[in-house]
Image (tube, rainbow, N blue to C red; front, side):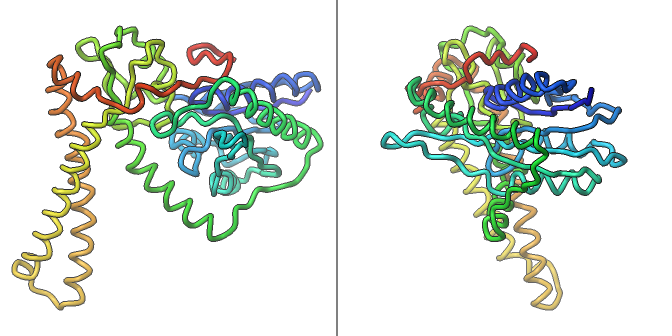
Length: 350
């Protein structure tokens, strides 16, 4: 009996649902299947199976940062055949399914594994309901059913092609690969952290700690009976979608205030560098320009850290005052639906 290891990250259950389908079908075909859900602290197994399957949701045209860190720990000594499944979101528009776009996500992970001598022979995409509740209102139950039908058929096709050892690798094109890679790079370094900082629990929060216990990167902690988000958020949107009271929102006032502070500090830094660098530093003009560019980039990152760490901590301290918290709880997401894949229980094993 051949062994297959399935390594996966899941946010709101779409990838977990896909993996469950894959595992059940493979077991029916006399494979021994072992599942490895990637969370903070998860380490790849030290033994080598006959096959690997890697599955993940597409977050800003890339695999989750935690997934990439996990794969970077894979042993480079194996040549096990490997397949990759990327799960992308979709919404309904005018009665039609509008698929998301996986961009360079599959190619990036394929390249990572090939560098470690894994024989990646098949990569594919599956489409399930979008879960980015921070930005878009999730689908209605009827829409979810339609998109699930599509997603299930794509996963079934993935299983069939895997069993037949079909050699097919997804390619998005050079131009799309470049812009989606650059966007995903910025998202992984900065975007996901900032988006996590805009979460807030409103007055409906009961302090049940479900968000804390189920966060795959353990970036949520409780303080004064309310959850707070750290700087390691994956932006997987699990917390905002699983809250039983729909109490987790995106704070519009926090977004506006932090944006104004961040932009103002950055403009101030740029003006100061351009005004005083030539007075303080004596060097040829061309080198001074390069230095100014480097200083502006460094200052921008430093001031961004100031915004999302010490300034955020001060604002969170103010939010312990009930009236202040009520003000900061103003949000467009309060009227949004929430989305969890049918049957998904984040604290349970598949």
